[in-house]
View 1 (cartoon, rainbow, N blue to C red):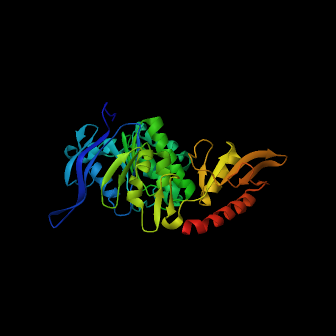
View 2 (view 1 turned 90 degrees about the vertical axis):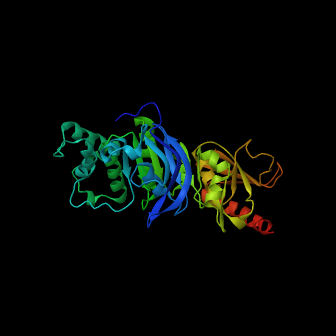
View 3 (view 1 turned 45 degrees about the vertical axis):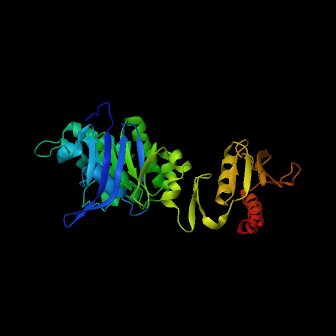
Length: 358
């Protein structure tokens, strides 16, 4: 179905949890949110914070303890299972028993809310399955057994099954769990493309905070105290919400770098990087991997950099020129290999270590 002008998903004063012996056991409350077509929301939080419970409550798969949820403007509690299946397609965690089904047959399950009493696929249904497979890059795998796919390919097939439902809302619960790095990036890229190009509202829970910060339009955050916050990824990072949710005795989220650092590390030395090409990009990645603070010209504020790396070109390729010391006439050394630059930067880190411990 096509959503109206309002939000595809909306929740007001929602309380989630479960019931034990007839008594409500709340997990989180006061949750208010909305998601429109073309928006990609990433739900993040520590283990046990209630991410899966929230997603299930939003689509009516689990009864909420209080508050209201609407799908395409209608209260979810008043919708039948068939009506919910036409508005929200879900991929939840858990092993999928595929038997001997082919990939096409697995994806075709997504069309059954639209089939006749005998669950027969029409030509339109088959076309929708083919389109869904192509959308996730599995068109050539249609006849292959689902059990023969890699983990990443299986996850894509399950997303294709959800796409075949042709719903305005797509809910993905930990779709990158157990996948390798390239496959995780592919899933996030696919989610963003589906929201941008097909106008889907995407709600995705994940432990991949770095990818959520990079790809999502909005973050939904449940912290260790089960408090809910929402906002732009950059706002939650700068405002300290991510730190409150994930900081531990030995690790903390550093808003300046968008990464986690050891608590006792102290303020790392700053390296000012001059250059914009590919060689500069990888030099920047190296600086951050070594635990140094990366700055760009004009962005380091009042702090004086501990070293400057300038990227140039030599007769045999890129050259990284390292200048140490605070003075303009500091020592300069040119390196033709990033490994050599890394060794020199490590020496800066070791010199700064005693000061950090002090």
